[in-house]
Image 1 (tube, rainbow, N blue to C red):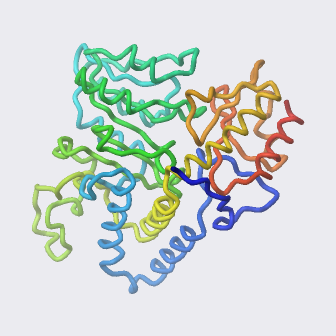
Image 2: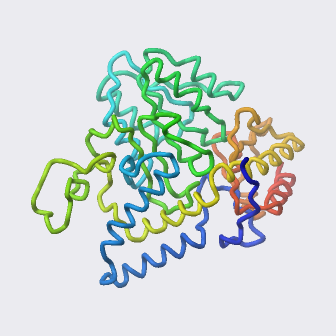
Image 3: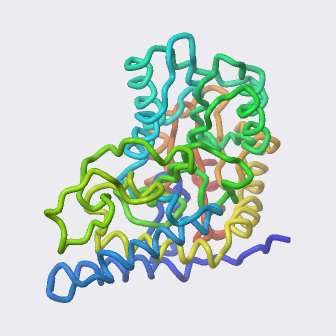
Length: 379
């Protein structure tokens, strides 16, 4: 049974009179993540303190932590600078072809659109955009559309604009039945919603670090299934070559490191961001995503109830994620809504026609009260 965690605000540096309910945009740095970054900067200031631990051991530890989070092997994990880098790596190593389709969602985040547009311009085929269902039930809409012509399902686990949830446990077996590959951008769910590659069996999974994984900006992770680990990396680096030891760096070779490590970005051993990403993942694993989801779901349910009392339309409970909710205004959002909320020291996001609220464990009851006091003034 998941635990209800108390507020963890003491682990962050957040003023009491400010409500940052915007983790889907950017997580504030944990104290431990900030300290790890400071240590990295000190190493840059004094480069003679750098050694193999920073360039090799920390990278290996980071792979292992991310692998633990998703139930994978460490060698299945590659390090990337962004979701677009990882998803482009995936798309570059998958064929679509004439008469085949890549299925995406309406208003899906562009990092999971442009690589597939490029893939079909290269191979033939088309990107098919699934309209937003009136019911909000993306899962059923995907299942109703899925057929033998779909080569790739390029999906999130929840929609970035309003937290609309996709039930991957239902989607995955249906995809396998028709021979469709499953490529997932979990940047808006991983670290909160439990996910296991053994259950879902995706072809590729990518996630940025700076949102729900509590890590640094310009850092991401890519999981590739064992049968997808023979492809071409996006870069031609020396560090992802087999036996890539600095002492043998000019003994050029064409074979790569085993597993998904072949897809690593250049300069993967970033001694500032790697320790920050480690600290973030250590905290996520200590909290446990199942506990985080249960705790945030209680908060999101309260937001939905109070929004309804103001006449706003929340993402329906049956089809929303536990950690994110969209609020829609019957007559459209008021002008200058985000600026008005900022003036009340409430920070959320507007995405398309949805006011996106995305709390985390650093939020408390005072933050929720501040949000609704501000909305009552502005609605």
